[in-house]
Image (cartoon, rainbow, N blue to C red; front, side, top):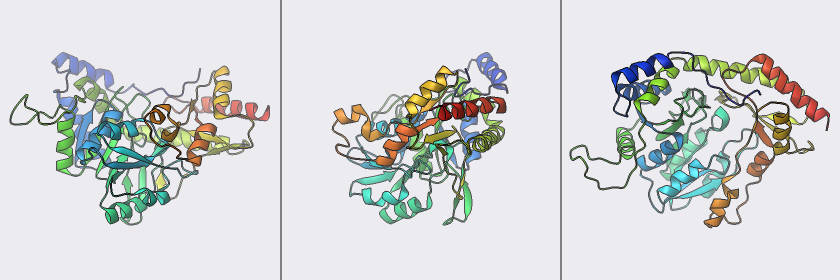
Length: 376
């Protein structure tokens, strides 16, 4: 089987884990947590980093940190992982959905303003599959309406955006009031499970650090005025993160090389299109994703099954938040339609994209896709 993903763990991961175990510091109090926070925030270009236990926790912590509370509304794409909506709902806020740009599968920034109400407090752009959202329109909207921007950069380690308004390239995660990253095993750098909240605002960072640690008062232990959570990252996880971070530029380069090779191999196969890379974006091809056009006789689900029969792993695109049964049972998004999101789910899939993937394996994936399509 050619797997969808396999991390590279052949650096100093074992060395740092052994050092961590030998020291006895395996909890969140260990020194690798601080080292990882400082190192990753420096890489992205922000002042502060707050490590948490996973990317979902990072989203909730980030929303709390910028002041999202009960009754507020957070604008986000329907085409994203359910974690984005869960983070808002757990704070008592309401997710407000926007359809996607069918070329990039990112939030359609031209539709965001129409979703703003008196209750809107934040916009959550999600950099899908490592391609940056077109942020300049969101900068303008956030300024005009006094809204917070909460970046979900979970899939975009090292991706960059060319901002015309700021006249420079900016890394994803450094274009907002607060940003969220995931270090799950399929991310460009991993801690197994893990996440981080980044900000250039000390007040936001301090709120994030408090929320991930049960909102302990710094001057009075075990005295609480808010209900918060234990979202801490362990020193063991952070040790792996430190080792991974040492090679992040190497990993990003591998991802880009694999993505370019996929594009060259797939471009002449009928009924396949891939994420359009805009001139404002330096994508990282977190997962190499394709969409089968409507003329193709099979769905993405069927294609995934046929690839599996041929020992090739593949995964479906996100089911839109508006179509999730749990939200329907809660009375959310009733009657709302997001056709581009629906099409992406029905026709989209991503292919093996791990850091250990070889060019020969990509050749096999692409020739298999071609054989399946030509045999329909």
